[in-house]
Length: 252
Image (cartoon, rainbow, N blue to C red):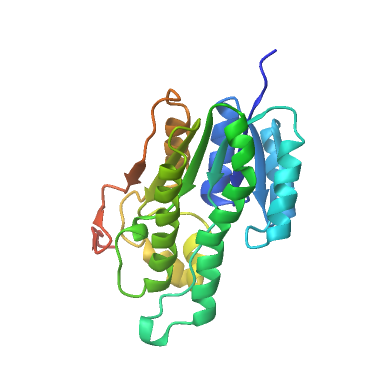
């Protein structure tokens, strides 16, 4: 009897995480949807059917340990981890940036990825065909004014991913990084800026920015390649965004 493939998705309560959970269930995975908001997770899992909700805060060692315990208790092999939990706070310049905001961004983006990966790596390796996908950002390799704290956290995250790939060479675990540019989701810019009008202005005039489903499609594609194929880094932007500082906006 073939064991069910388990995929763990962090930050699954909305946006890219929720879209990825939906897509992976369609690809035949049993999805463990992990996030802080229990009510949203329960709604998502009811929709998905073949899924398990686990409340998890990736900034907490204890919470991540509980996630690992819940995942390994399931009947199946842990084949895929999607490190999606993350976020940004503020657009302050370096001179006046909030140290607390910088700490939070580093904790949730870099250390959150570290905690969850460490906790689930034994199970991924034991599966004989594991994959770690980390959702980074084009900020992982390009800085921009007002984005130093987020870029620093994402640079740290990409350093973690690249080092992990080297350290796992020869073991049955692929290490993949997906770096999106401008993705229009319901919460990312709102949480970053704390104001709906400011959040809307980020995407104003941009014809067809990426949406969460576009990134979920990328996750499904890299995860379903033959196991000997490792997509080291996939950079994906809307056609309207040639670079961090080059975005085409239509008159509105």
